[in-house]
Image 1 (cartoon, rainbow, N blue to C red):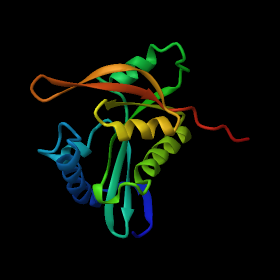
Image 2 (image 1 turned 30 degrees about the vertical axis):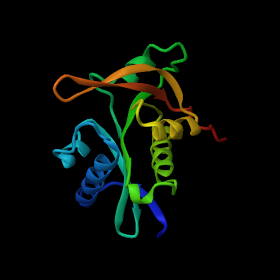
Image 3 (image 1 turned 90 degrees about the vertical axis):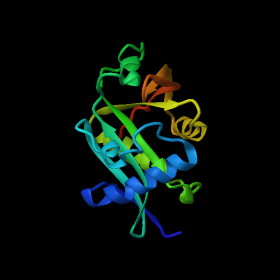
Image 4 (image 1 turned 180 degrees about the horizontal axis):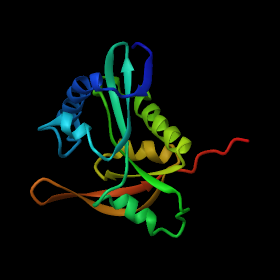
Length: 175
């Protein structure tokens, strides 16, 4: 495989990212919503920044960092958590990796890019992940994220699925 580069997403990346999203959904059932209009699922008014992973000219992964909104259970759980540090919160989401490039640490590199961005902007990242997505849960735990509770991820016409909520570790302080 060609070396993978992680960089901020631009408008030209959206069609390729949408194709990868549909491929991920077909293989993993993630996301549970949004594949009818994947481009719209990737673009949000709450989005602060999104990153793509590319291999050559191909988009092979994606992650977004957004402002929390109504229904962001992880943000609400963290705000009421006894260890809440008062930092502003952002939500990590829309993480997916092309099934053809799994095992090559693309997801880890995307999450680290989001974590670095959050650290540079004094934001504490939170997320929810469906309990069925075991590989994603292992990734977050390996990167030092802490479980802060459980929630139900609601989607579609009244459907829901259990989810775990996590908070990112504080960024390392360099002096």
